Image (cartoon, rainbow, N blue to C red; front, side):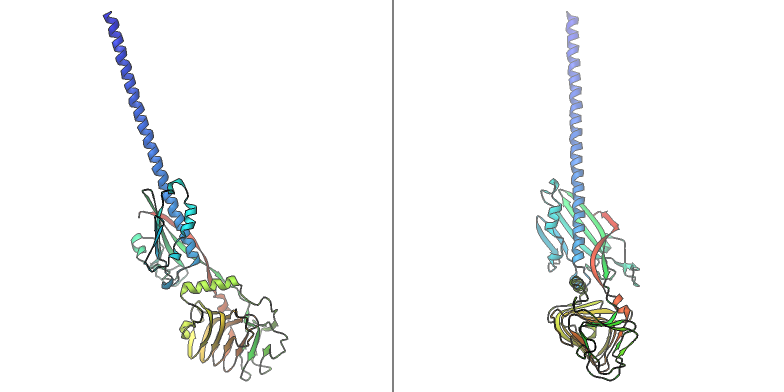
Length: 407
């Protein structure tokens, strides 16, 4: 009897031990699974923060495509969004140049973003001491350093068409920071090989002088017939147009050599470079007309005195959307003069090259507007002046520069 009780006792003890061991194993397994779930959730949020930072970076690059900061006036402010409130630094910065919050909200719509995302962006020049790509200068750098790069200006100060974009996102308690260089893409504008394309051409004064030297190009006029003095108004039968080249009659439609889209790209390029003049504003002196693209919205302007605008190796384009332009004095201009003639004028002096000016390049006057010339002025066709005209047309991330940093 006693033996039976002992055996039952040991069985009970053994059973309790087995149950205890199973409970320990179960609790350990439960803790392990709970830990794994927590780690998995943390990793998911970590990845969501990275995706948010990359989305902010891409949106910032798109903003740069619309407004490339080519001068200090168009510098991009630092942007921070927290709890739906946007802050720009400096406070005077243009908030419209920040990544679009509505676009980001459509992208960041997962469960991890439901409690909100805090993000920030900074644009910095890639200044340094290395040789710049495509330039003969040595004030560039193509390596990102979070301290040195963030001390650079927030515009393309070295002029190499590249900038650093830094984006950071906070999701939950997870920070992720990514950087990439952003490169502005440029598109060349192709012009007709023409010394002058206009509605009409008129020589106002002067004898057998070489007012227009074609150098193998064309003189294209939209008026007809070319034998009519109101169309091609030279004062002498010989010597005022210098060949080889060809005088041709053009159809009146299209009225513009460049499309409205190309005009808008030139406007945006001038705005980015600080060479845009709004309605009623004229550039001041020869220096005001110098540059890759000078865009005048609407004004009647006169450039007088002496001086040189641009150079043979660096010609530019002076583009008038609406209004008139008159050269007087003894100016030397390298590049293209373009009168878009949005006002639809038929006057013969939309562009008046008077005095003793020298234009090495080409002239375009759209519609039925004309160019007049006189005195000792000259237009000498130079194909290089046309080949140099290009516009900002977008941006692209330099993928080899993309990386995540601690920050």
